[in-house]
Length: 308
Image (cartoon, rainbow, N blue to C red; front, side, top):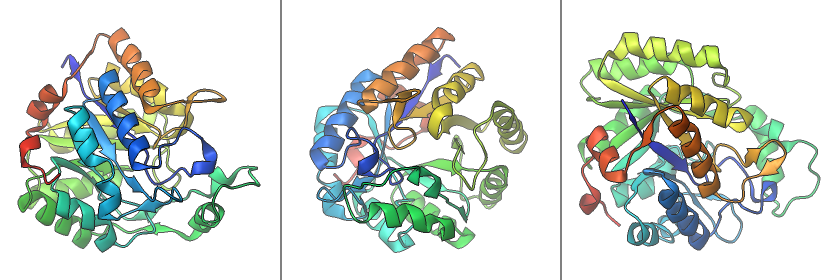
């Protein structure tokens, strides 16, 4: 497969505003960076919302609407809304906006796990907002809840009822078996789009041998009925993207996953990361897919059927 889908995860819910002045927070910032990322080659935009005043991860519908109409007017990229939200949110909070907005795609985390962010505290002693340090520090006792009941509910409410397709986020090998379980129950249909999520403390590490094992396991479980993408949180982002591209997979970058463009150098935008990964994947002989090509490859319902 020569065509490669580049996903850009624009802001996420992990990094805090004090970590980078380039992390988009307001609706205007998220929209502008998303559109620029699409112009740089991202076919899919994976989106979270934030409170524009504090930068805190948000599940509020009005915060999503602060950027979604602008993005739709400014580019034709596929909008992929998170159903993971933030690990500190309830499932009802996480789903409120996606249920109302009916996106073409949404993410779906395939298992409950530890989700440890406290190593990002580092040596920082000054914070822009009073929520940031407690948010990170308390993650030593944080469980990201995604039970089989939760997963089934999202598959039904977002998929069957609203026509969304899924980015199945698999943080470890066991998550692939959970996905196979739901495929065997007839709740997941091909083509299955698996996102191997690597480098989060609590999930599988971002190491080349682990990606080989994930791919071999998915091959055995899903055969020709799936395609995969890879994201690596932190410094291994581009190295793992290059390996994924060489293996015939797809890639995800963005400031949700990594704030840097090189060692010790903050990325100034999401588009900067997209441009860099585009150079990498084209160097191994792949061609970046357009949004229309990504829609065809993933069997999406089309932008005319969303709720924004």
